[in-house]
Length: 106
Image 1 (cartoon, rainbow, N blue to C red):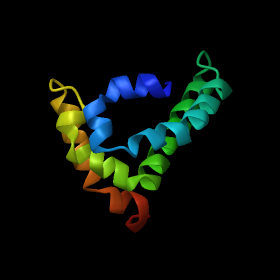
Image 2: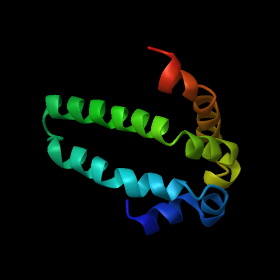
Image 3: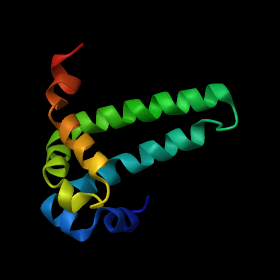
Image 4: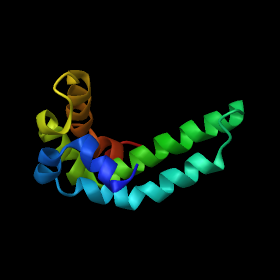
C-alpha cells in the first residue's frame, strides 16, 4: 500500500493522533512486498510459507513499534471505521498484551 493509500485508509485524524503510524508503512512496505513476491499463491506450500512470514512480520512489527500500536488502540475511534467495533476491540486487547508478545512470554 502506498503512503497516500495508507493515509486515506487510516484517516487524517488518526495520523494526526498517531503520526508514528506512517513510519510503520515506510519501514515495512518493502518487507511485505518481498514476502508477497517470494511465494507462489497457487502452491499450497507457498501459501503456508506466505502466511507464516506475514504473521511473523506482523508480530515483529508490533513489537518494534509498540508505542504506535498502543496509540492506534487508544485512538481506535479515529483509526478505524465506526462500524468496525471488532477491530477496535481486537486492537485494544492486543495492545494490552504487547509486553507478553514482545518480551515476557517465550
